[in-house]
Each structure stands twice: as structure tokens, then as C-alpha cells.
Image (cartoon, rainbow, N blue to C red; front, side, top):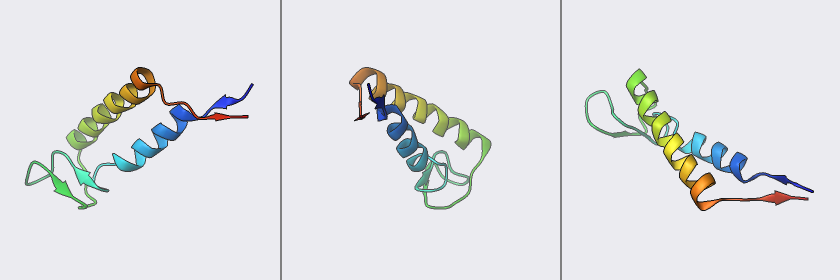
Length: 70
């Protein structure tokens, strides 16, 4: 019986993509959205955490991404 690496791969990928300020920041300091500014704020961390939870739940629970390693 192998391990299911699907949830781990999804979590790592989303963590990299949704890090505030890396690709985009929502909400930004001066505007609604900024791209690649490498800054962050508390509200931005909260918004990105909510986005992470929603997308992760959708991919792992609703769609059921599975990667089995034997």
C-alpha cells in the first residue's frame, strides 16, 4: 500500500503560488491588486489564506487529486 501524495503536492504548489507579494498581492497597499511587489500586509495574508483554503478544499475534497507512490 503506497502513500497518497496528491494533497501534499497541491498544498506545496498553492503555497508557492499564493504567497502574498510573490506573484500578486490582494489587496495591495495603494491599489486593489499589485503584481510582484514583494511586500505584504496582515489583511493580504488573511485574504491569501482564505484563497488557499478554498482552492485547496476544492482540489483535494471536491475534485479528489491523488498521486499514489508505491
